[in-house]
Image (cartoon, rainbow, N blue to C red; front, top):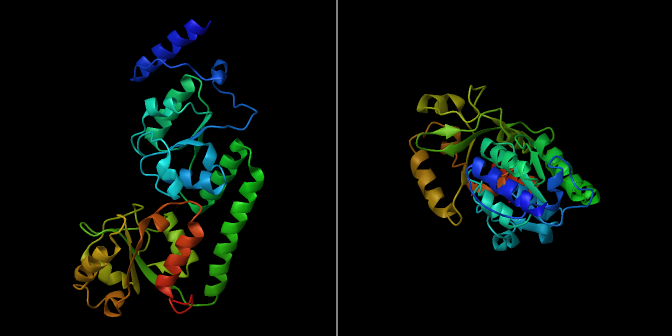
Length: 298
């Protein structure tokens, strides 16, 4: 029987686009079933998923992460299984996972389909908005058998958010322009988790309703928006000071925009605010400090 399984696994992988002979997992006889035992070896296919697993106390069980999973620092030592957009199925299988946690983007949907065909257990979660994040934490905690830790983590995050909302209660909203890139200029629209974070921090998006989630805009739209604060997340580690210099130079052409006239251009750590994960409260607090530094003691 074992030889037939090896042949079947090899044929399936060949048809899926990668010829690799490996022993299938014990659960392969029923590809759709999830084991009643909590998974011991878990693979994360996105940086925010990695952060969730570690925040739930599952770091010792993490058997593989994507190359862009750099937080917490312990994640850097884990075996790598490709990138967020280009998962490596051979590397995933080599970790001998009991559970592979993926997002619902197409490259990872394809990965999950291929893994399930040869008997590996996969959990796909969608994290597009803040409500999705709490649902994903609950789903991952349930699959890993750590429901109590899930409740504790969610409560901690909710408490941090509530504290910031209380601090901003009754205060006028600050108009924020959230810059995704400068050339060409692209910003965060209202149908995004960034917009939710801005509102929870006591601000409002300076950009009105748009067709795209992260629309390109021109100089006329920047001037019309009249933002009071401009926020740019820095994407490269250690690049904050250089990006600040570049930002001040770039935005100096908009002298009539309140944020520029008042010198309220904030360049912040991109990882903290650009990943929907357990550091949500910290990300909202970073934004809130850009909007009202005196209110939060800085």
